[in-house]
Length: 373
Image 1 (cartoon, rainbow, N blue to C red):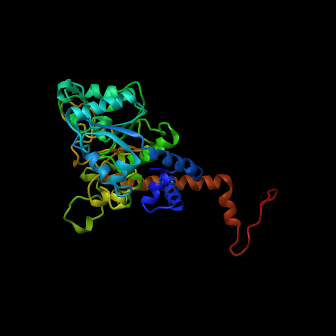
Image 2: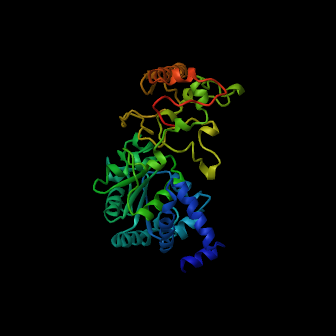
Image 3: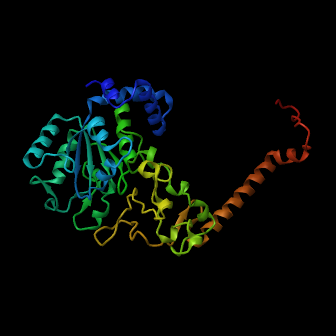
């Protein structure tokens, strides 16, 4: 079935398709000049690029999250946008049939490899699939993949399994010879997965990444910068009693919120088709997109975010170092006063302040001698 027939089957005409492409372009933060290239990439994707989706030490939460996508829905993702050749949770095949199908597709190469869940490295016996160590399967699949995407906190940085005895690692710590795109989160957000795949189809290269190999388009800003409770934070209004109605929208920092240290677009782009996200549902940010999540226990020596619902005693603010949460608002207010003072001094130094005093209300501004308007 050609691409136009696919559109007609869904009740779409060419004009409506191009409008959808324009919306997708804007959602990716790309200029409008890329719309024709994205439209072309989507049309070529009608051939359905092959995807191998491997699951390691995971809870299948990332799979559930992606399949809970509203637009496009799970059937469109699995059957129309992509050709999911191997996925233990959703495929009908099992046993030797499934494993032989995986081997055949690895031999062909050129697929998009998605890895969900961490990889045990302490002992291969901690996780075997079809009698083979999961680490070995990942390495073989990565060798012939066109691109590698790690989805979820576990696949990116080890996640919660890293606190246990398995020596759990992220894909980037096992696959060293090929670039890996990290899409962390517990679970991953569907828009991050679909947007990254679309961008790869358009540009045929890895998107711009940060120091933790995360796409800057989704992980370029602190959640705290766009938090709906930011005003209460700056007023030093922190929630201490869940049962006090007057504290309903107070900052959750004292309840373990990791928003000031977490890079994600959750506050700008809400989950479930824009319905909600953690802090708006009165749950502290767990920092699940950071390498520090979860990091706990004697076998994990990272300075992590566990326990999740424990107060952060100190936090770092640019230029002022560590301060206690109770004085955060005062520090920010003081910084604002200092900033206003610097602005005032700057105006006086450049002569703008003097000029403003000389101007009389109700009369047009006169240009300074020797200057042009």
